[in-house]
Image 1 (cartoon, one colour):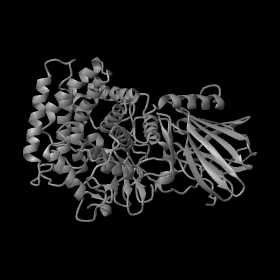
Image 2 (cartoon, rainbow, N blue to C red; image 1 turned 90 degrees about the vertical axis):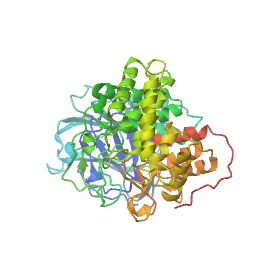
Image 3 (cartoon, one colour; image 1 turned 180 degrees about the vertical axis):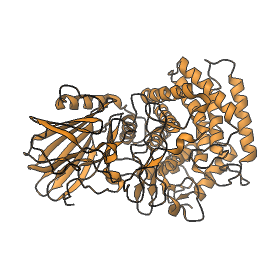
Image 4 (cartoon, rainbow, N blue to C red; image 1 turned 45 degrees about the vertical axis):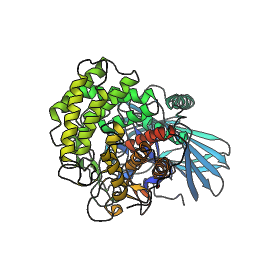
Length: 600
């Protein structure tokens, strides 16, 4: 691959080629040319300052001069990434991180260029543009080796680039530097971006690196009981990097990345979905980790106490309202278009209350629930009582129906908290409500073939219907559970890839990509049925649906073997971790049933 490009212009890559760094308050995608192609600052849901991923101006690149091939890897148990290039004259690495843990109003991007073999020759370029590329650099000044500037309302400081020079032109102003690092040496760059005034002194790079390394070492637990603990820890690191100091876990770092080219399915996922937050808590509980579980409980509890029965499906990481959906005047990622905000802010999703109760029950089992948490339990249970007969948007956020998954998730949550000793006298009430919802759902949403169907008016199957038995709504030995798993395996899986539901009469892979979350759920469902070989097969197939950075998107295109949708997708990493914990605790034995990976 040649390291040649026009200044300020980096073409988008397939998603598998991007690495991800994060500090809890924001994240960045780094491409093969060493370009930070996406980063919003100062917060997850702020406008992008580096937006070339969706066609906006703004990039920060460290690119070898001449021809090279790209690679890279994460340092163990962290989101410290090492871009690695083999050039015609040697080997170069660039150590990449956001200073961790991050500050809410100040971003610190650390980049250390290392000449591993031979002298390193690179071109460095900085063009920060706030407002999705609409605000050029202004007030550009240099004081010795430190540059300062503004873009929109943001203040910037960049050190380590004394030889940089501004490009000509006021509307596309950028800093460019030719850099040579002698063999065996390294060179530090540090970029600060702040909404308010920057600290008086620039970042001490050595100290910032040490603090980041130390913080990551303390942030990721051992997870030795999980299947493939190294990869389980990486998914945990991704979840930790996407979790704000508020406890809020964003669904993804990006927006507008299409699930299928020109299909109109691209969304803004830079917000905290209650469901995803609970899934991360479930995973943490399964892995016996109290830190991520506590964060999830803290965020969900605050939202329940604040909004009660009017809980919305998603919030900003700060607990605010998700903005209305709108388009920007940008080209978008190829196959998609530029969409900011999300219409989820106007939806009702019943399953969010059930998932919240499941989360709070796990917190109670771990001794992590307090008085506010107990109040949140009563609020969620009362909200289900008041609203369970209403149609809702469901887990896939489509048309309002009495979705079976939503109702059975409410049943699971009510049953999970019915035995809480801290709230005496209400357990029977909650069990009675759970039985009433379960009976009504069974009367109207069991298919004539004996499996659960999507809703009373939709006889189709759905990957979400694998979850009720896993969450305790129904028994794993219930005939409806077994019939649902068997029917799902036959109708909605192909060659080990699992799909959400059937859109129409087309082959599954032509309607949308396989849904990676469903593959991990299928692994857990098979494990619960003691089909050990099948469970392991589903898990192995699903965990391979990623790129070199071991990041998961929402969908996987099985024809082109490409990732689709926003990146990284938190709920997929959560289910990867939960399934790794579940399979890691199962007996090391074989079963005699069919593996079930060549069906459909």
